Image 1 (cartoon, rainbow, N blue to C red):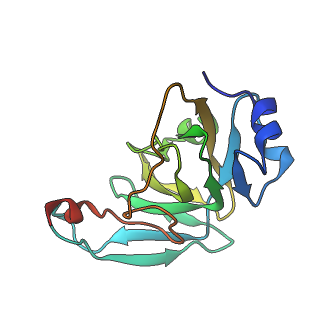
Image 2 (spheres, rainbow, N blue to C red; image 1 turned 120 degrees about the vertical axis):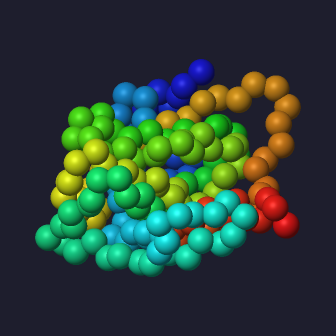
Image 3 (cartoon, rainbow, N blue to C red; image 1 turned 180 degrees about the horizontal axis):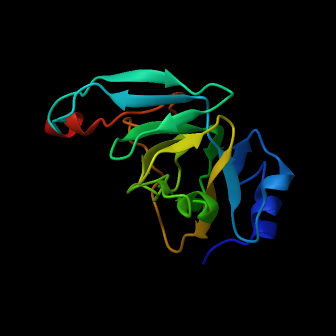
Length: 172
């Protein structure tokens, strides 16, 4: 079952941590998260799952940055989130999707117990100008039924910055 916005609000500071929190970002069944002013882009065109793929940082200026089509950008939310009771899920906002901007290409499913900033997989269909701090995606929460273990993976837990793929660690 998906939590309503009122239920999310009721759990803030207890079973749901969102920092910074702004009550104006609550929706009927989600909470809007915003884009930090940093992006990462991979240095090589061909990526290798078995190797650490180097990436370079781009700063999004206040006047905006034009993203190129067919290029993967990694961003992150300004907000730190944590929950040990609910399953967090992330989706792009419909307003961004209607501009051909995809915010979370595949990994929108969070694990109960995830703690950190969300790395966003950003991809656009046509050139688009983006801005720092824009409300770009939304988090929502599912209740979880039955016994469960908390997410404890060392790969992405308690991250501070944008997290490129650490899949190469699966091959070690």
